[in-house]
Image (cartoon, rainbow, N blue to C red; front, side, top):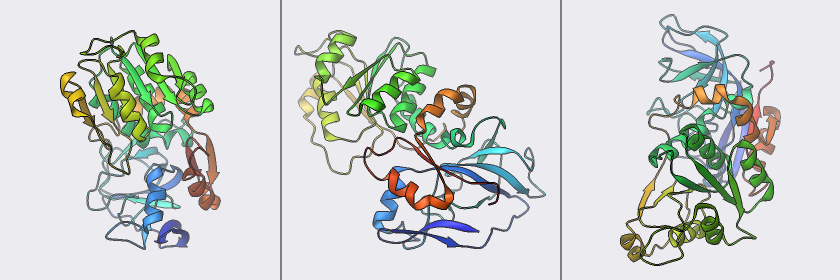
Length: 339
């Protein structure tokens, strides 16, 4: 079979590898779609991850079809459409430094257990939507970390896949008002399409003033704060942290799910005096299949997040596009029936 593998710093190649052998507790998945994550570009830049630097398989946002099933596996059958938990096997994390990746013709799921390592989805769900399950779980965990109440007013910085997924996550929990901030008009339009109540173009508008217009003034030691309860950073820019803390009222929460590649200074007197909660979010300890039912029920809305579908035969183009800032929202690699 063919697989996309990091072969050195700045280089990813499609190479021929042995098709996996299906053991009695395993299932073999024929890949149908795999999303491209920003971390894939990072792995390529640094030449892969230990212990497989120079030979790191790529792809950790998989959806596919079961084509072989071990004799000891229960609750699954050949032909099932499934979404996959790439973190289910700590010794072999799919596409994140393990010995297998989902940007390949086939993917072996060892010790396959429904609801733990993979979950079945209805056949009518488009493959590109199914491939959103993993990043949407990342977004849902960030939302859950904020412990939102229906009465909360929320602002999300960044209208990329995680930011848009967070809109849907907050909406699913009944949050009353959600604002999305971004620099790109097309992304802001998409945020409104999927259910944001308002958007702010930070290249054109005073973000704090607009938040006060939308959410009212907030109680704080000093004036000029917004009534926003939750600030979610899904952009990863230092200006987001500065803006959120400058706007935050007493008791507000700032959550960070975006990756910041450099340290960001914080003025802690403001944090202390207004008792602001700052928290981080990574991965999906419990959410990988919690999000699946909402994805299935509202797949037509989730489908709006996908901006590009590129066949595996052009996977290099997909990886390049996803690594180019502003070039794409969500890139999904698709696989044909002849894999």
